[in-house]
Amino acid sequence: MKKSLLVVTLLLITAPAHAEMSKGQLLYELPQVTGYAWSKNETSKVWELADSAFADQRAKCDDYLTQLDKLGVPSSTKVNVSSDTPDFKAGDHTLAELRTACDRTVKYGKIKYWEKWAIEAMRDNARLTSGQPLETAFMKNCISTYADMIKAGINPTEKVIEQTVNDNDGKPVLWSGTVEDLKKKWCEVGLKKVQAEVDKADAPYKKVLKGDKLKDALTYRSFWLVGGKASGDPAVLAKQNVWFTDSSPSEVCPNGAQVHVLTRLQYDKAQAISKVTTSRHCGNPPASAYK
Image 1 (cartoon, one colour):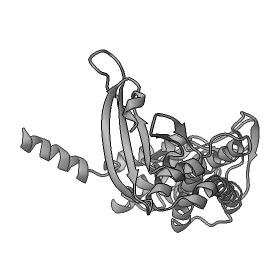
Image 2 (cartoon, one colour; image 1 turned 180 degrees about the horizontal axis):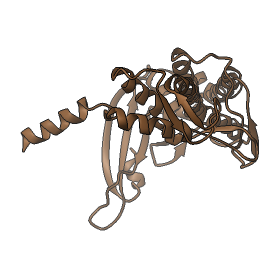
Image 3 (cartoon, rainbow, N blue to C red; image 1 turned 180 degrees about the vertical axis):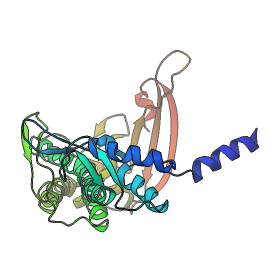
């Protein structure tokens, strides 16, 4: 049994992302993929790129053309594309022409992968201005995937495919412009705004706390204190050398009550952790546990 599992695992690891096809299969599939990769929006008259043109973030047309190159099929070979594309009308076209069309698909596929993060970053900006909880994941992903996209050969001046998207409140927003401008407007500026808000919220803690105390305070913001009262006031926390956190794992006690794990954090005069202990309780910990 172990040997069989090992063989299957190795096959999965070494198998290509797209299975190799015969010359006939490739010459049949390629024009199909090329044709359905793009469609024109009848309302906006803008060409839109289909998600189905990709597999594992790779353009199918690029994979098929690479396989045909390996098989030595001449670029002058003609195939019939049954629908219009941004590069040519339906009809017979050479593999060289399909390569030009595929290059467009590859390029905008990279842009499309990046802009899904940029669009969410735009929505995060709306959340920020409306006072909702701060989020930075989409903005950070927008910036990191942008860097990957540029390294992959996309020019910062390339424009996204114009479309209408909804903002955080469901209102339509015209999504257009260069990838660089959109990254700066929604990802970089947004992240700076979020960081400014975070710095503002952190300032009172940084004023009176340091070391482990500061690190824990910025993580949890509020703690239970000796006696069972809770506080998130930095001035109050600074005077206490024992803090508690209460967590609820996905467990229940024999009596059906939720399990609570009370963690006691004890700090020394330098505000460094000196002792950590935990206790388990069925239901909310009693006041006597906070000592």
